[in-house]
Image (cartoon, rainbow, N blue to C red; front, side):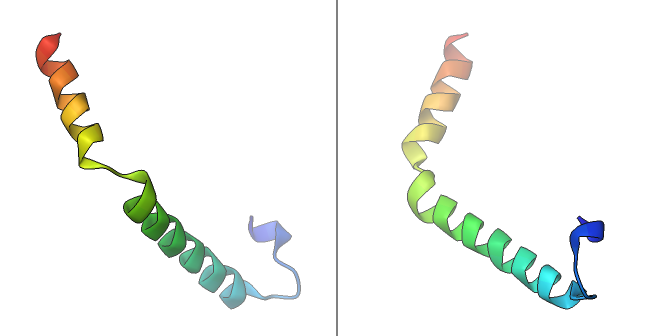
Length: 48
């Protein structure tokens, strides 16, 4: 992605990237992760 950064705005790019990672983690943690999913995963491993 470095060649796509215009006018030397590397700091803005890095800040936006970090914010995106944090936002994605937060949304996945709050809405996309359930302990039932882990329980099902381990139950399938034991059944096999």
